[in-house]
Structures are given as structure tokens and as C-alpha cells.
Image (cartoon, rainbow, N blue to C red):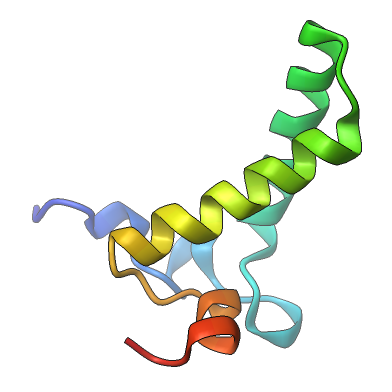
Length: 76
């Protein structure tokens, strides 16, 4: 099994939903935002925004095309 094969975009849990976005990944990000906000008594909305922006940056640095990154930056 090659490294990263479990995170192949568009496959399995990463299958694209509406507008090409991976719904499962977005739901996990929202859940993580909720848990972090409750645990550290910070704003859920700011936490969610930071996590989504971090996700965009990390995917871009790792050169992983996501639907959102393609819309923002174009195809790698």
C-alpha cells in the first residue's frame, strides 16, 4: 500500500458531494471546530474559519487538489 492512498480525493469517504466538495471532510472539520471551541472556550465560528483556512493551506502545500483549492488557485 502506497503512502497516502487512504486519502485519495474522490474515493471512499472522500467522495465528492455537492459542488465537488468532500462532505465528510467538511463535517469532520465542523465537528473538530465545535470540540475545540467548547474545550478552549473560544468562538466556534472563528475556530471553524481557522480550521478551514488551515485545511486549504495544508492541501496546497502538500499539492493535493481539492475542489475548493482548484476553484481558488486552479489545477496543480
